[in-house]
Image (tube, rainbow, N blue to C red; front, side, top):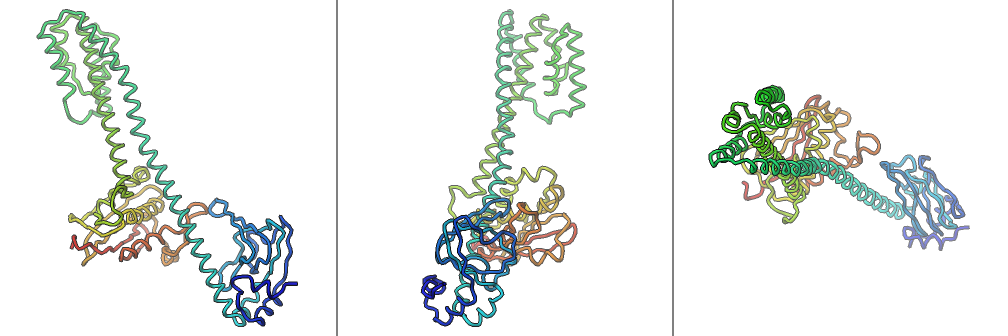
Length: 461
């Protein structure tokens, strides 16, 4: 039999009148559990509130593909609470130690509200604390999931140029050996100063010539032409040299002087050295391009996170948008074209810059998902009164009229289990409001537009 004194030791029941305590006990059922016994199951109807009188309980549930475990102790309240919209238990519960519970049926919540208003108020406060804690955990999971996706994409983006640079470096070693061997071969011949000068000038001319590379068909035709020209001069095994020179858009006429002024063996060594020099120049360009891409990505990451910068500062909105687009390039390049329409004046917003980047990321990421990874993303900025307006639009299927009023509600999502927490647009709205702005969305098939108003800093007005 449960004593009044036991219940009064539970914080939410402290100082309540004896008659109310007695009524609560009369409506509740005492349950004794052995260690390992279950007292509720995930998915069962949420039909009772539990007061833990003695012992320790453990609850376990699956949320978004992740197992969550938490422990309750003497004095804690579990199960469903008054005014909760919970229909089914989201966790399963069992006793860790021998335990005693009071089970209060949800069917008696209406009389409870009338007879025990102070307890009801405390339980509502407890439920609010629970919601805040669940929201905090979900937001943390959402941020970690978003960070995980960004990290995976950036790792891929960084890996591509890094692999290209590594591959080019490996090829450079063998090419340097070829040019060294060809130089020794040339050194074995007695070349005049004029012949040496001509070889060096032709190398420099071919290596330094600019212009876009020829297309694949043009390269193939030029390779055949060079190979045929070499064969007419007795060089039947330099097909790889023909390929290297064709990629540099070298015409056979440019090489004719080699066979006019040099004997066949010397001309061959000079051609091998020339081809190796061309390849080295190409490899160095590839390494430079790859490392520049890595440098650009690292700079974008630093700008995106506002690393080494003041937390609050005047942020250039267009630069912020471009940094976010760079970070999301791994998703955009699969089939999304970006149309930019930036008003050509600086839009400065006094802001936590990394938070604004989170706003753009959530909206753009949703747009890419809505379009199935293929479509047109439109990013526009313009001034309206003392605000900058950022418009992010896509030509996806649109948001249905039934769903549209709920898109900013926390935990509301149309994505499948494990694909979204429903906190992305809630986060967008909270951050925009924090910056004294507002956000709205309009949608129809083929045209979904998010518009964000942010007050401009005094320096931009």
